[in-house]
Image (cartoon, rainbow, N blue to C red; front, side, top):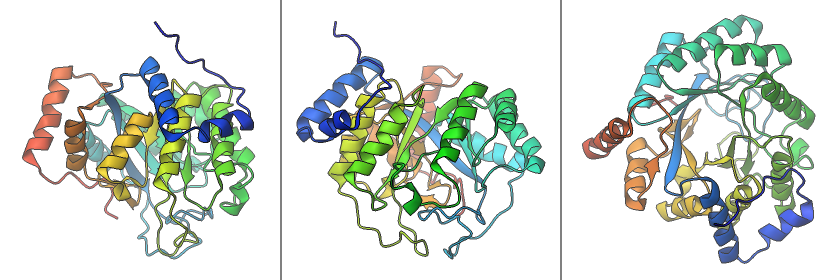
Length: 347
């Protein structure tokens, strides 16, 4: 039996560049080999993302329609009531999601909002779903309180390489992001952290991003790889399109460098063909978001995903309390009825 790929935290830029420069077929073969050593190659973890507070963010991330610095026509909304969040969580579970992710457009959560977000965590957990939140920067105290409430994952992306970072964001530093990841890890929660491709970065920047993630003391359990969704009114609305093969290469290199992590095919899927998505799964992506919206940007609807899964022979990864048969029956009902899935955010 072939030994599993070693989990390393000492990748050099030269080693990562060598992976990116492999012939495409060789790279995908290596990534698929690593993937099969650590995961069922025909299972994909399924999450749903809900915006619990939308717009008016004080950060100036150039890709983000929720930034208060840009006029994107986005309707601002206050923090969602707990019962409304639970309604969306139940719908997500019925559609086959095993993890429910809640995002708020904040620089960091205010003290007055902490009781509400911790209650959301506790109540969603009672539904039998894994929980994830992205609320901006966290200090040690707030990370500890979220962990105490039972939060499973905390998302805080590095976005890009340290060298390119200040071309995209100036209102928080790269070290601020690393500090938040440290507080999350120290609290006992799992880390969800990745980046965005297609923001005008170079191949060297993509190498730098993956090196930062893979050389953390512990690899993120979840690594979302986003393709920029260009939004009118943001500074990146006219960014040059990223070559799809470069995107797939990045997925494959992430799989090789972080063999035990779930690599999530995240934002930008709406613009990807079924064939491209199938290629990313072969390259090692094994997590997606269900639902028509990711916070405020479009996403393929649930039925489209289920139809693609069926064509590819892929099953949703089992992570919740129902039996395999019960969940599979629910998923197949979704395929057969071909009804519109609930809108998780009315963008």
